[in-house]
Length: 177
Image 1: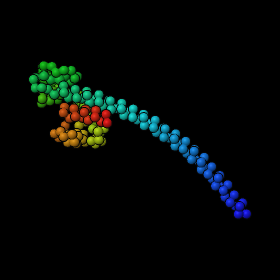
Image 2: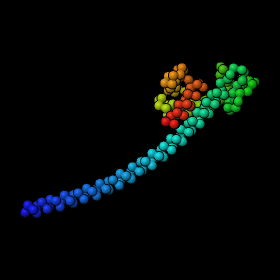
Image 3: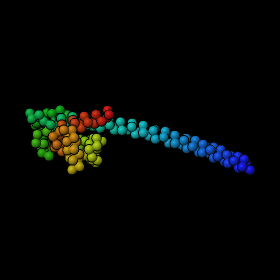
Image 4: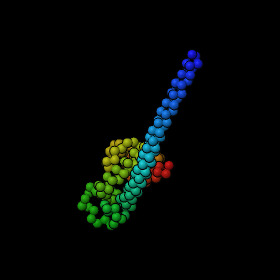
């Protein structure tokens, strides 16, 4: 009788073992499938982020060029709103709102695009979550000031040529890390 009970108990254990094996095999296959799906999504996300990084680099390069062209060397030249090279000042007096104290002419559209690009870069670099709306608000000024302080620049909280150049370098460096 004891022998029969032991035999029955071992039979139950064998059946339970096979059931657990079958369950774990099924679970392993499902887990492997889920992991493969997540890896594929990770590669897609990585490609998307690389594309965004390249777009930010291009935009920062354009912003840097625009900022450099908009800053006047003080020789009576002004950058055209379309980004063309500086020309002799002759007809910019008609629109006072687009003429800065340094004598450079800037397009509101170009300025908003530059600010929007800087906002995206500041967010990507971790200097705050700034809405990329092209408006120089208090959060944007604070993020710029934090970035300037972290990079050892004079803290202005404004988007000058030096800050644009530093943002461009930081984005390039972040892209290679």
